[in-house]
Image 1 (tube, rainbow, N blue to C red):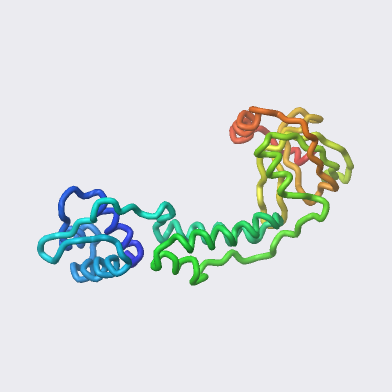
Image 2 (tube, helix red, strand yellow):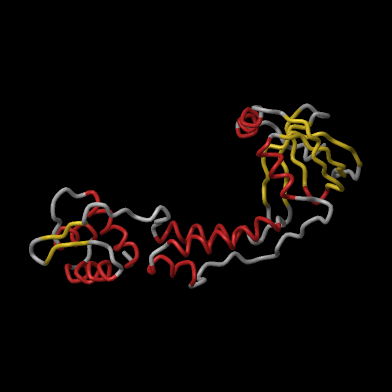
Length: 231
């Protein structure tokens, strides 16, 4: 177990205990030596974690101490880093900028051992960054999904046929080569996938489909045929 994980587990163990816990007990639980536990306790105390006690008697965590709300395990921290790296490859400019702000906020809230997982830049998402269609506002699409607002789009399908559709958007799928809006198509009366790079225009209508979004997403997840790809 890496040091950051041990520090997290030691704090958790002491928080849940109602009596002093010896270094030997923690060492057996974490499968490390007592010497490692002593070093970890000293490191936590140096970070002003209020641990009291001494060797041979046991340790307690002084009442009133709470872990920061953004306390993650190293694996959880790395998952966030990778997720934000993948977000930076999307065509959605606002999400790319937001991903950098997320990492800054998390890094500011984490203790030093976990902060290293963010600032060391050991995880990367490689590959081409998707290009954003100039006429499409991803922020408007995401807002329409949240607000359950219909969209009108000018669309060119696989057969190069141009149509205008009214959509009830319910989700966005990010692929390496493009983004896809999943929506109920009022023309086809069914759930369809619409590639954003085939949209020539996308407009909010001001009309809403209140309280239908969850029901439509359940239909989609249950396996509604979306093979039409905007057809």
